[in-house]
Image 1 (cartoon, rainbow, N blue to C red):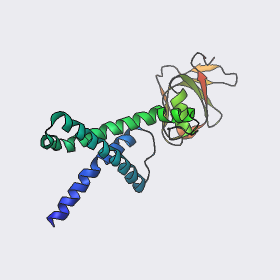
Image 2: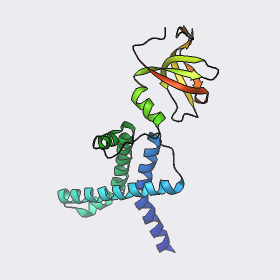
Image 3: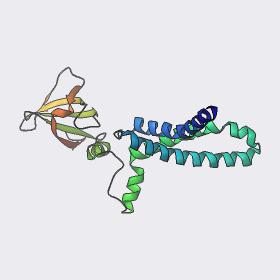
Image 4: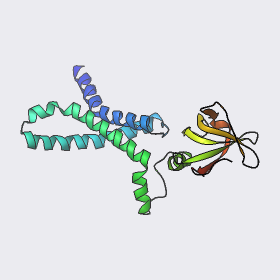
Length: 200
């Protein structure tokens, strides 16, 4: 029975870095968490890349230090460190759209690395422009979106410098208010405006 326990520990030690990288990826991106099977597949992909990188790094360290016994002791810690770096790098690539932008230039895809068109639009325009939220009841709210939800059906917009717009686009500022929370479920249309344009 001890051999079975040792094998389980070895398998978990082998797979742990992949699960660490996957956990970092999902905690730092807005991608929805898939089902358990898909998460295991992603963790296995991270495990494969991480283990190959760890083995290659160990070979380089052994060539430099020529003390294989000492370096093999570092292997578990090194594999976890590589998993953390791998998770952070994959999150950075996903959040910045670098890889997909390169592939779009090569005409290999039209996709982005973002989880949806909603997220892609806010990633491209959200930090650089004011928006107009068309709310239920034909009301319109103009302002700067400091935060917005990753999901268009859940969460809230945090609007700064908010103004109600009338039919002639004249703004009525909300006095003594630093920010307004607007439920995403109440928003029908969003207009993205250049930052230089005012409401009124």
